[in-house]
Image (cartoon, rainbow, N blue to C red; front, side, top):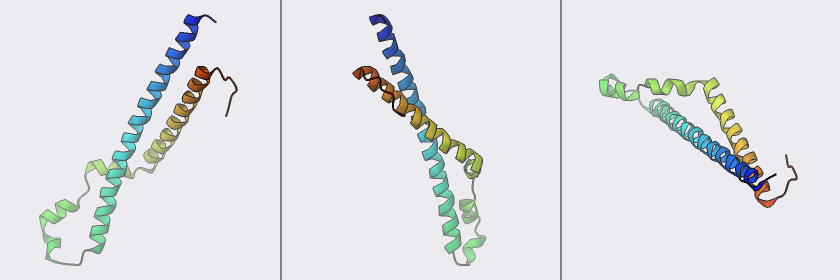
Length: 114
């Protein structure tokens, strides 16, 4: 293998590693956004569960405050949430494997670990 081919391998692996890091960052941001929406939903449920009957229940401002918006609907999709969790796991595994390959390439250690 020529020095040029070796350099090309390192460059290609570096680009692939960078892409995997970016993908994981995007997935994490999506997960944090969903978690924040879930927090909003559970907070509204808790607030409503602890409220005592009062005149405030007839107030339209309170009614609007308690409504869930369309941004909350997709959060409650078990299928989408499960897929996101699986995507995060796959992205972490890919990033780990690429990091291991880069480390092995840099050190010249070619023993494979699984």
